Length: 156
Image (cartoon, rainbow, N blue to C red; front, side, top):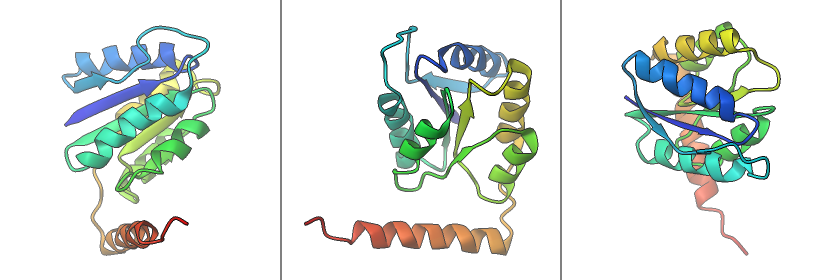
């Protein structure tokens, strides 16, 4: 499974930490930026790069996005078809986001989480499979139906 990483300046240090952690554990990682600390960069470009790739290959890839609050990245990521992005603040929530909702993008808030908590959240999220229980599959199918309906709404 390919893991796409993206972060703005407020998430840059955490992204670099996660990248090393995942590579050392044998994960295939693709860094979509930022590639250097730039206090003037904006999160939408990095969130879009990651979400686009996960949207195109949602069966074989996942994404991890980091910004100060995590909210901006999460908003952008959830605009893309077949993306289920989750802003996660604990390992229990990471488990639920994968087990129940089959989240394929993890958003993290660098301003509110320490490195050890981020490590625990990330590893829980990556190691938790989707449960495939009927009720969860039904709910995800409803999300897909809504996405399809939204694509059919004309832009005037």
